[in-house]
Amino acid sequence: MKKLGSGTFTVAFKHPSSKKVILKSVDPVKRAMASGRLPKSDLFPEVVFINKETHRVHVYSMKHYKTLSSKGIGTFDGIEKLKTVLTPKHARLYKELVLVSETNSEGIREFIEEIRNISNEFHTEREEIIRYAKALSKETKRKLIFEAQPFNVAVENKKLILFDCFYPMNVAAYYN
Image (tube, rainbow, N blue to C red; front, side, top):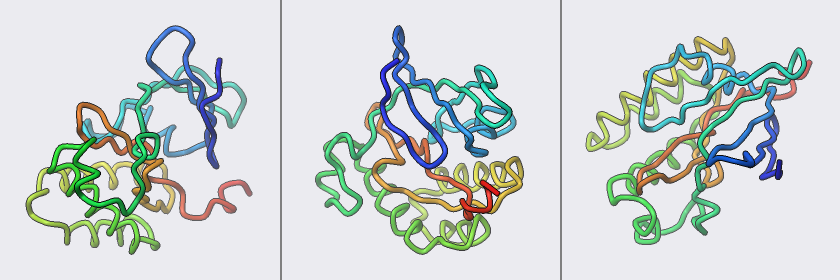
């Protein structure tokens, strides 16, 4: 399998015969996403557990999404450039989520307080994200951070996908 990239917790590979990626991960967030116990939402991908490679490394599959960064979009690109790959509404939502992620450094509770301040235009999306964040925090039993960087979000049918926006706050503690 061809390696697509890696991060702190996960290595992604292109599945040889499908439009999916294979994720080898020690990420508690991926484990929670594959648990089947999180609310369904079009804003978040479906992650499927495949097997346990070692006592810590789990293998998952997920649809292969194109990230905003792979489409040449940076964090602070103008709304006009975002509209070339996202619907106008999802471009505005992404800009608001970037602002929230800049102020979110204390965990899910603070993230929820901040996201409640985004425009009421995104009431439905805001409530979906809050439900998902609460369930994710409960499932992982970890203090999580939200980050909406271009390499953490993707686009499908001009809509935003938050595929890798939550991560454990204290990475060092996770490995100890």
